[in-house]
Length: 175
Image (cartoon, rainbow, N blue to C red; front, side, top):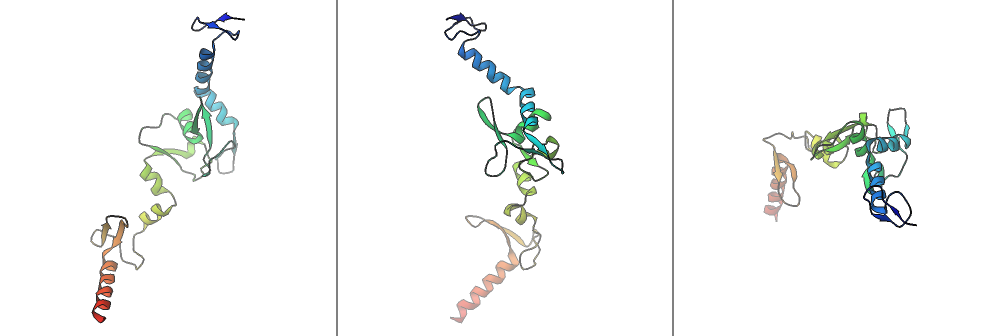
């Protein structure tokens, strides 16, 4: 049974009001609407005592919620921020202020640069950036700090480096 598509006017061989491409486009548009996404987010969260909206759907190996919007996989916390707060500007990433990757509460999310997000975290980079002294107690300040280029780059203490060089020269002379 053939019918005419109510959108584009072409013949539909599958007997519906719309041809397959127009029906798929309408479905994709409906799935991308903010109201539809908000409904999906609200339907898949559980509130915890800290105010987090814990995502109950699929999560990746790091605990971040994932779902499909119009056939594309997206992070739920990013979609939540975009639906409930507004767009995320280019060059910014979403930081979980509650430190819970499964949380999609827009009040717990803040757009920041990647550098700020990393330095707010608890990883190696954040720990080393927050150090004010080297392992021997010397202060990391402008006079005592140098940045080594190459593979072993990073922040280093000049006093410790000078002491290591002195020990090396003393051993070399003793031979």
